[in-house]
Image 1 (cartoon, one colour):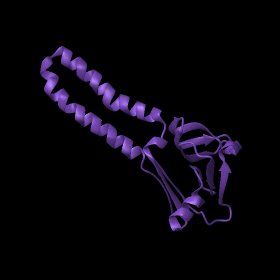
Image 2 (tube, helix red, strand yellow):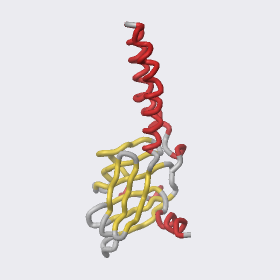
Image 3 (cartoon, one colour):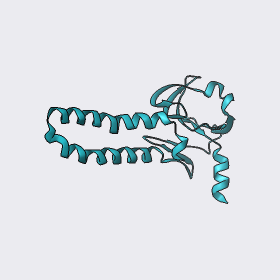
Image 4 (cartoon, one colour):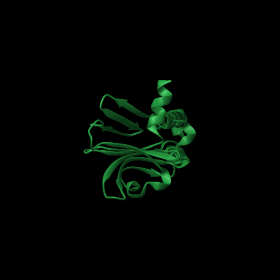
Length: 165
Protein backbone atom coordinates (compact mmCIF):
# COMPACT_ATOMS: atom_id res chain seq x y z
CA UNK A 1 0.00 0.00 0.00
CA UNK A 2 1.46 3.31 -1.05
CA UNK A 3 1.40 6.45 1.07
CA UNK A 4 -0.39 8.31 -1.74
CA UNK A 5 -3.20 5.71 -2.09
CA UNK A 6 -4.87 6.83 1.13
CA UNK A 7 -7.11 9.90 0.96
CA UNK A 8 -5.45 13.19 1.91
CA UNK A 9 -8.26 13.98 4.35
CA UNK A 10 -7.01 11.37 6.82
CA UNK A 11 -3.54 12.91 6.80
CA UNK A 12 -4.99 16.40 7.23
CA UNK A 13 -6.95 15.26 10.28
CA UNK A 14 -3.87 13.52 11.72
CA UNK A 15 -1.65 16.52 11.09
CA UNK A 16 -4.19 18.89 12.64
CA UNK A 17 -4.52 16.79 15.78
CA UNK A 18 -0.89 15.76 16.23
CA UNK A 19 0.95 18.90 15.06
CA UNK A 20 -1.45 21.82 14.57
CA UNK A 21 -3.33 21.58 17.87
CA UNK A 22 -0.16 21.22 20.01
CA UNK A 23 1.38 24.15 18.12
CA UNK A 24 -1.61 26.36 18.91
CA UNK A 25 -1.56 25.34 22.57
CA UNK A 26 2.19 25.97 22.64
CA UNK A 27 1.77 29.42 21.13
CA UNK A 28 -0.80 30.30 23.79
CA UNK A 29 1.51 29.03 26.55
CA UNK A 30 4.43 31.03 25.12
CA UNK A 31 2.31 34.20 24.97
CA UNK A 32 1.32 33.72 28.62
CA UNK A 33 4.86 33.02 29.82
CA UNK A 34 8.00 33.19 27.59
CA UNK A 35 9.78 30.64 29.82
CA UNK A 36 7.84 27.93 27.94
CA UNK A 37 9.89 28.52 24.78
CA UNK A 38 12.59 25.89 25.36
CA UNK A 39 10.21 22.97 26.20
CA UNK A 40 7.93 24.00 23.34
CA UNK A 41 10.80 23.93 20.86
CA UNK A 42 11.60 20.38 21.98
CA UNK A 43 7.97 19.35 21.54
CA UNK A 44 7.94 20.30 17.83
CA UNK A 45 10.15 17.37 16.67
CA UNK A 46 8.27 15.04 19.02
CA UNK A 47 4.89 16.01 17.53
CA UNK A 48 6.24 15.77 13.98
CA UNK A 49 7.72 12.34 14.71
CA UNK A 50 4.42 11.17 16.18
CA UNK A 51 2.61 12.35 13.05
CA UNK A 52 5.05 10.52 10.75
CA UNK A 53 4.85 7.33 12.81
CA UNK A 54 1.02 7.47 12.77
CA UNK A 55 0.96 8.01 9.00
CA UNK A 56 3.31 5.06 8.48
CA UNK A 57 1.22 2.88 10.81
CA UNK A 58 -1.97 3.66 8.91
CA UNK A 59 -0.39 2.55 5.62
CA UNK A 60 0.52 -0.85 7.10
CA UNK A 61 -2.36 -2.76 5.54
CA UNK A 62 -2.29 -6.47 4.82
CA UNK A 63 -4.40 -9.35 3.57
CA UNK A 64 -3.06 -12.80 4.44
CA UNK A 65 -4.62 -16.15 3.69
CA UNK A 66 -3.44 -18.74 6.20
CA UNK A 67 -4.81 -22.30 6.14
CA UNK A 68 -8.58 -21.95 6.34
CA UNK A 69 -8.81 -18.27 7.28
CA UNK A 70 -8.10 -14.78 6.01
CA UNK A 71 -6.39 -12.20 8.22
CA UNK A 72 -7.20 -8.58 7.38
CA UNK A 73 -5.41 -5.61 8.91
CA UNK A 74 -5.90 -1.97 8.01
CA UNK A 75 -4.51 0.65 10.35
CA UNK A 76 -6.37 0.50 13.66
CA UNK A 77 -8.74 -2.24 12.50
CA UNK A 78 -8.31 -5.96 12.00
CA UNK A 79 -10.54 -8.95 11.37
CA UNK A 80 -10.20 -12.67 10.81
CA UNK A 81 -12.50 -14.44 8.37
CA UNK A 82 -12.59 -18.14 9.25
CA UNK A 83 -14.13 -21.21 7.59
CA UNK A 84 -13.21 -20.27 4.01
CA UNK A 85 -13.50 -23.90 2.86
CA UNK A 86 -17.13 -24.40 3.89
CA UNK A 87 -19.64 -24.88 1.03
CA UNK A 88 -21.58 -21.81 2.22
CA UNK A 89 -18.47 -19.61 1.88
CA UNK A 90 -18.25 -17.33 -1.13
CA UNK A 91 -15.29 -15.42 -2.54
CA UNK A 92 -16.34 -13.25 -5.49
CA UNK A 93 -14.72 -10.39 -7.34
CA UNK A 94 -17.27 -7.69 -8.14
CA UNK A 95 -16.81 -4.46 -10.12
CA UNK A 96 -17.08 -1.48 -7.77
CA UNK A 97 -20.14 -0.01 -9.47
CA UNK A 98 -22.07 -3.31 -9.16
CA UNK A 99 -21.88 -3.77 -5.36
CA UNK A 100 -25.63 -3.28 -4.93
CA UNK A 101 -26.71 -4.83 -1.62
CA UNK A 102 -23.07 -5.17 -0.52
CA UNK A 103 -22.41 -1.42 -0.68
CA UNK A 104 -21.08 -0.06 2.65
CA UNK A 105 -23.75 2.24 4.04
CA UNK A 106 -23.03 3.22 7.63
CA UNK A 107 -19.70 3.16 9.46
CA UNK A 108 -20.43 1.50 12.80
CA UNK A 109 -16.81 1.32 13.98
CA UNK A 110 -14.67 2.60 11.16
CA UNK A 111 -13.20 5.44 9.19
CA UNK A 112 -15.34 6.76 6.35
CA UNK A 113 -13.33 9.15 4.20
CA UNK A 114 -13.10 9.45 0.42
CA UNK A 115 -10.74 6.72 -0.85
CA UNK A 116 -10.37 5.33 2.69
CA UNK A 117 -13.19 3.20 4.08
CA UNK A 118 -11.89 0.86 6.76
CA UNK A 119 -13.52 -0.84 9.71
CA UNK A 120 -16.89 -2.34 10.55
CA UNK A 121 -19.79 -1.16 8.39
CA UNK A 122 -23.47 -1.84 8.02
CA UNK A 123 -24.07 -2.85 4.40
CA UNK A 124 -27.05 -1.85 2.25
CA UNK A 125 -28.56 -5.31 2.90
CA UNK A 126 -28.41 -4.75 6.69
CA UNK A 127 -25.52 -7.15 7.40
CA UNK A 128 -22.44 -6.13 9.39
CA UNK A 129 -19.18 -6.47 7.42
CA UNK A 130 -15.50 -5.68 7.71
CA UNK A 131 -14.66 -3.20 4.95
CA UNK A 132 -11.17 -2.49 3.66
CA UNK A 133 -11.51 -0.16 0.66
CA UNK A 134 -8.34 1.87 0.30
CA UNK A 135 -7.70 3.99 -2.73
CA UNK A 136 -10.10 3.74 -5.67
CA UNK A 137 -10.08 0.07 -6.76
CA UNK A 138 -12.01 -0.94 -9.86
CA UNK A 139 -12.75 -4.39 -8.40
CA UNK A 140 -13.75 -5.43 -4.90
CA UNK A 141 -13.39 -8.90 -3.44
CA UNK A 142 -16.41 -10.05 -1.46
CA UNK A 143 -15.65 -12.74 1.11
CA UNK A 144 -18.75 -14.14 2.78
CA UNK A 145 -18.80 -16.98 5.29
CA UNK A 146 -21.58 -18.03 7.68
CA UNK A 147 -19.89 -16.03 10.47
CA UNK A 148 -18.29 -13.01 8.72
CA UNK A 149 -18.57 -10.85 5.62
CA UNK A 150 -15.65 -8.79 4.33
CA UNK A 151 -15.12 -6.39 1.43
CA UNK A 152 -11.51 -5.96 0.31
CA UNK A 153 -10.41 -3.50 -2.36
CA UNK A 154 -8.86 -5.17 -5.40
CA UNK A 155 -8.74 -8.75 -6.59
CA UNK A 156 -7.16 -10.96 -3.91
CA UNK A 157 -6.90 -13.87 -6.37
CA UNK A 158 -4.69 -11.72 -8.57
CA UNK A 159 -2.52 -10.81 -5.55
CA UNK A 160 -2.04 -14.50 -4.78
CA UNK A 161 -0.98 -15.18 -8.38
CA UNK A 162 1.54 -12.31 -8.31
CA UNK A 163 2.90 -13.49 -4.94
CA UNK A 164 3.31 -17.06 -6.24
CA UNK A 165 5.42 -15.98 -9.22
